[in-house]
Image (cartoon, rainbow, N blue to C red; front, side):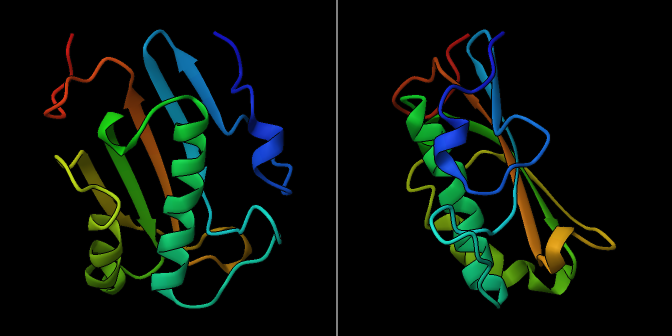
Length: 134
């Protein structure tokens, strides 16, 4: 099981963990804060932050040759569960096909004052209708 090959190219932030790890046909994407990979900055507001966290996940997924159709599980961490309606609007825009399984929960705080963090699990062998092919 090798560390995600392109992780150093995807962010200026250098956390002490892999951006993603493969285990067979599964790709486990670490929690993505809403930090822009080019500027290293975080925009204010839940909608912008949700978009940035999802963009970061998509960059990692796509670097591995996968798409949003391969994402089978997502966990969303929010500092205010009342933001969930706004997050849902952003979230749906990244999944034009079948939606993955998901958990959304409120946490006391996130690093850097972030309002959101999102992690994901992708499965490489997904048939066209979005159903895992095991």
